[in-house]
Image (tube, rainbow, N blue to C red; front, side, top):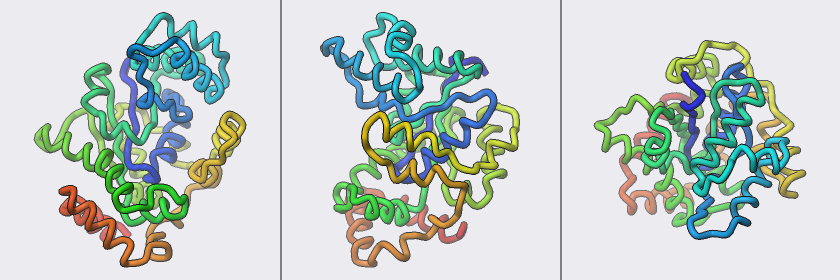
Length: 279
């Protein structure tokens, strides 16, 4: 496929989006990097400072100079055009053919993605919602049922609603489960690469850790990411079923009730049933 056919990875936070991004980045044709945070950028009516701030952050994350990326972006005034130009430049610089952008929120804006990049492909990775919530508890982030449910519905729920509106399938959309990825990486990565029409490369599935991302984010932001800390280690199945040690029944029941109130009871039960079968 042409370089103008990017790949977008999305899914609920703590669902394996970073892992999938890191694995695909080992492919000889696919360029990946840290989350660009493009969905947070709205430059309509903003000063040039907002655009320059984003370019500067990208420069830190991708080991480039702000001037280099500003030049590649050119006079673009919208984030889609700037993202396309900057990622295209970085991809070419790395000697690769396609770029991959990973943001959890991508799962909720598939229509927006395909409107600007009609030849893009979307990978939606889903994890047992109970394990996702367990990871949130460990991170002390969005642990209130209302907070968790809102974000889950804006990612997993939104992607499934979009897919339902397409008749249940779409050629640009591929869904995979975190549990299957860590338990049978070769099989799952083979399916992903087949969907992307990219050749099989064993090193993509043989993930042995990527410590550089953790160090880069810590240097750039001063913050330590628990996700990137785990990503520094080889692939493991130890996080499958972690909810059993972390999430008290009454807390999960409260979360499930909130998800049901928002109309997602059937989807939650479906995904949990699939997780139980996989495990």
